[in-house]
Image (cartoon, rainbow over all chains, first blue to last red; front, side, top):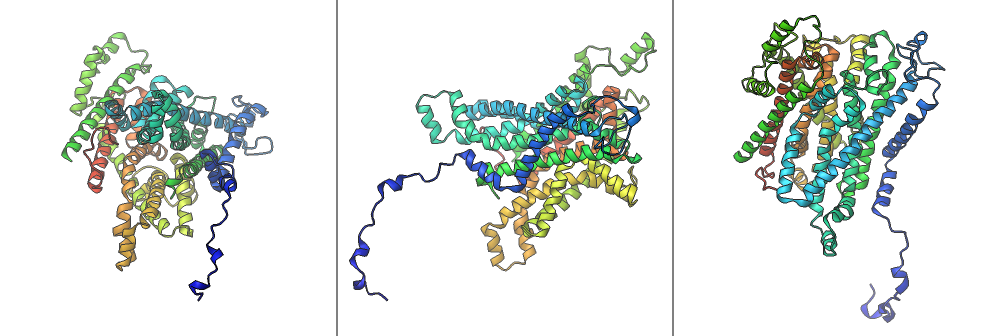
Length: 309
Length: 311
């Protein structure tokens, strides 16, 4: 035990202050997005999904262009060939190349999914943003409307619309977005309601910023996390809905194909043993839904670390 | 509480009314007429037919007749099957669809909650990964593909279960599994996530410290609180299962309501479209209403008579 008197005096001299070094920023500041990206990169499954989706998009664009086989041309001598070196995924009952059709189907399914997500985003953000920001009576009227729409069984509405407007890709997208934007609007409204009372919004107001500027510059950027997650999760549900409608015979019309149409055609002849006709579209529907869902979960963890479980 | 129930009830009526009106006016816009296939019908017969189904009256009269029929629950005769009324078709189809739906929900709830709970208790263990893999497959694979797969594997290849129709318990196995897998996966994921959160709470430590048996802690203390999110999504899940029955019934050749729904649309059978749509929607909206009220009773923290403008 050291006695108190034995402690040398110079132990108590103040340490030298490093006035410059203290203020020096050693590492570059991480923005919110850089930080989220860093977290996302650590999530292996989410990254694999992201890479898969990028490859899927590229192949969906490229394959139908470069493929020697046509998407729609009928070639009866080649009907129902098993996968071989010419037709990698085999052919269907009209001799069309399943490989080319699968990637053409990818175009349609992805386009429907992404278009639906984008429209949901636009409508939902505007509606939810206004309701949340205005508050009071405007908000309660707007939310009553949403509550009623939320109770509508959306697939029944979609089916009715498809019957009335005829089956086309536009109809599918319109039908899916008619009830699809509601989820987005609710999320945006909730976020805006919370954020609008924060000091930085008050500060912005005190500088004379208008409503639109505050929504655009202060509120939306802070809501982007949940919005992006919701969009990522909208895409697989739209792809599923499209496949479901095609299955009921209300989807994209022949001779063009989406994954749902291909699966539906194949299921009716499944007992004949032409497994490849069902296997490839089914595989790609499932992989794509899986990838979007995993990426969505990963993004949720990355963009909102507070919610992490 | 009573005020809340009343408010939800009014909302429910409005929703059903909107669906009914939407169905009516959309149907007027459908190209084609139910008598399209009988091209040779002479004009007099055509006019008589239209009078019989009230199609010759002005639209607003048709609309009110239609609303009256909904209120009295009498949808009139079907156009394509003139010997039967829509009510008879519904009475025949609905019990089968309902049975399929209810069994699927019960299976999904029991297996989903069990799977989710075990996964949470064995967090990051083998069972956890296994359960979550099953859950991911359930979410990613559309039910019509699962159904076909089940038929091929369990009915055609191994011959364990019959491939179609709805007669005995063994007939029910495959359709129920195909329908329940998706919702089961969602429930399992949700239960697991909220179980993991609840298990870190102080009252769980307290319960353990008191020396309660582990299963009692899990069932009485943890699960009760962890199940709230599951109750919340029960409503949306019902909608999914209901529409799922359309596809499953078609694949397995089950004579439920889904078949009539799809047929009625393709045949432009107006009374049957109205009957099935309104019936389906009303059933669904009513279920949502029940779920909301059950939720209110289960979680006393949720003040049911929220002030306007609050979440």
